[in-house]
Image 1 (cartoon, rainbow, N blue to C red):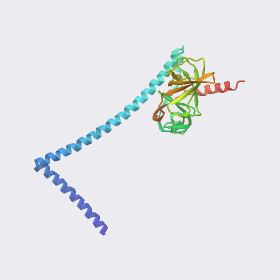
Image 2: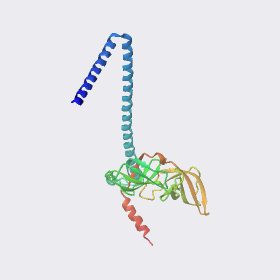
Image 3: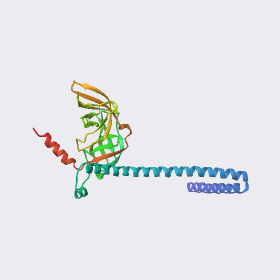
Image 4: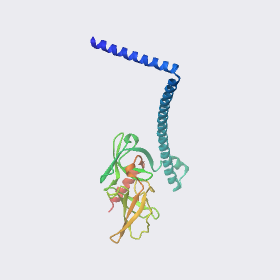
Length: 276
């Protein structure tokens, strides 16, 4: 009983306090010119601050929406470019063009975890089997190769990063098409090597290295970096040090590469490897 009485007393006191404060506000604003001016100045200052905060929030939300639209538009343009590259290299009838499934399709994803300080680094992205992601799909950005999908759940995927000393791809010197083995050596995150480059190959510091297209994982022609230096190995081949374009410490938006012909390509490779 005492507790209830105490609670009621506290509520009554609060209501009385609010009424008195409101009355004081009205009296000051109506009876004192200076007080009214100061009061209204304070109110306007608070209003201005709140309006600014609201405008900043609306601007942030609009930027987020605009960024999403730009990513979707970029994906559309990349897919259209792949289709154009395919058509421009082949003479196809109109009926075949209508039925054609583009050689590569790109699925946008966001990096939610990324390691760079190990010898075998990994990445987790926010797309999984529900989004059409499958193991062995490549992951890229406009600046280079990110890695490949190792395993998937419904909503997420685990990606083996290019920053993995056990991972190699085939890359070429862009100006002459000479290929070699492209690999990260576990030291600097902004450098890799192109090894087994034949001794007769002509190259210069600053030459661009690109993906070869010799696998079903990555499209041909993704620029990876530029030649920084070279070393003659065993008198038979060169190993080139390459400055990478990709900033692996700042990965966020990536694209998963879907090649509809991947299974067929792998089957042919397996048959080729079994030849004796």
